[in-house]
Amino acid sequence: MTKGNYQLTDNIQASLKEDYNTLYKYLDTSAAIFLVINKKQEVEFANRKACELLGFQRNKIIGKNWFDNFIPKRNRKELASMFNQIVQGKIKPPDGYENIILNKDGQERLIQWRNGNLLDDEGKMLSLISSGVDITEQKRAEQIAKKSEQKLHDYTVKLEEKVKERTSEVLATVEQLVTTNLNLEDQIQIAQAAEKSAITSKFLSSAIAKNFPNGFIIVFDANFKMILKKGETINELGLDRVISEGVSIDDIRIFSKAQKVKLKEDVLKTMKGEHLSYEITYRKKYFSVNTTPLVDENNVISRVLFVYNDISQQKKVEQDAQNALKKEQELNELKSRFISMASHEFRTPLSAIQTSAILIGKQNEPGKEEKREKYVKQIKKNVKHLVVILNDFLSLSKLEEGKVTTNREVFDLIDFSKTLIEEISITTREGQSIQFSASKNTHSLYLDQKLTRHILMNLLSNAIKYSPDNTTISFNIEENDRFVTIAVSDQGIGIPEEEQKNMFERFFRAKNVHNIEGTGLGLNIVKQYVTLMGGSIDFKSEPNKGTTFWVKFPKLNNELQ
Image 1 (tube, rainbow, N blue to C red):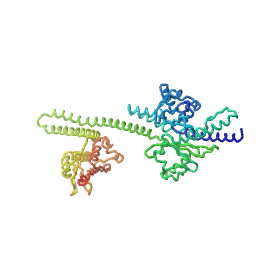
Image 2 (cartoon, one colour):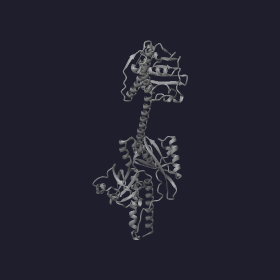
Image 3 (cartoon, one colour):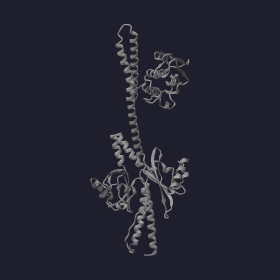
Image 4 (spheres, rainbow, N blue to C red):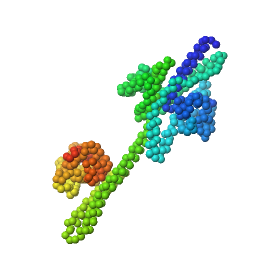
């Protein structure tokens, strides 16, 4: 054996070792499972994620029969038969299928696989390349979601913890790749086999990187140049048309200035040995980003690897669970507030009605007509209050069920408003008055009279209720070229500034009106009615000085165009 032959072997071995090191570093940072199974059904390669999932160290997996050791007995025969048919070239490897594997503790995990063949020079299959994603928790979450929103929430917490896990540090070295006991007379054969293995390794590395599942990988050098980009998602996102290998971060036109600065900072941090983990969004997709430094033959960090994993599905499950939980919490809170409010609001008028009825029964003698009339008025007043409460509940229920429709018709707003003011004036406090004003050329409106009546009666009723005796309530109608605006102003107790943002929420009542009857539903219903008819509502208030509400509707000529 000549010196030249030894040098050839050493160079091939060094090249092989470098290729394997690079391949393993790519694959061991992935959140996906990677396996290579030869035609003898033996595991030739398993990445870090596969080892973690199976619960074995790599040297306890390599060389083992995949089906006998890691597939449940009930599925073993079927899957082994399918594998043999693939090896014999009778069928193609299935893509996008699911099957169950067993870990060290005998637990079953559901994996979603993507497969590819590694072929020799003659086109015959050498090994099956499989990449997979553990979808056990996702499947469980889908089943749990159908049974209980609470169980879905519990799963989301676990899923969030899983999504936030940082990718483990890349293994510093790989256990012995090639073991040989051959003597010097076999060196030529070893050199030839090593050369073939090196070619196969490069093909395997390229195939896996190109088909990196559910994401993509990018490698940058110390000068911020992109020296490698691979992965199936690159084409899906259209990134293959705008970024290319050899381009600098500063020259990537789809990135904003801030994005370029952030990416360069991440490259620098990783070049210093940090492992970063964070999330980004691009074109309505969510990606988890994990970075790791790559060392050269001198053990110096010369490149950095960025791994982008598509976690959009996990995010959707998480968001659906959060929305479901939030909706349930809102419903529970509304139920609690409804029960509390209804109990209070019904108890007071019913007690007053009962008391008045008892007193009427005791005032049967002649000459007590005035007292009886007083108690009858009291009963009527409280019955009317109960009717208002019940109508609010009924209106809210119809709105929630989408059963409220508008029955629009043309009517004169000024005459309509004057009639309402005359009707509600009998409920004013002592010394209160309602002052009406309107511009001369106010147009008629094309609205639902019933809903409009509810809106204006509620605003006037609130102005009367929350204003002291001997004050004036203003009802004003103004117009411009497009809108008619109705303003109701009072000189009452006003609304605390810190609570004004909540005024149109269901069951909300300001802290300064707890001793005044009310359901907290009126303004919420008013706002929904106004919106239903294409209008808008706003207000301005100052504590102890008064409040003004504005309701704005489109004018008739604009509405009908």
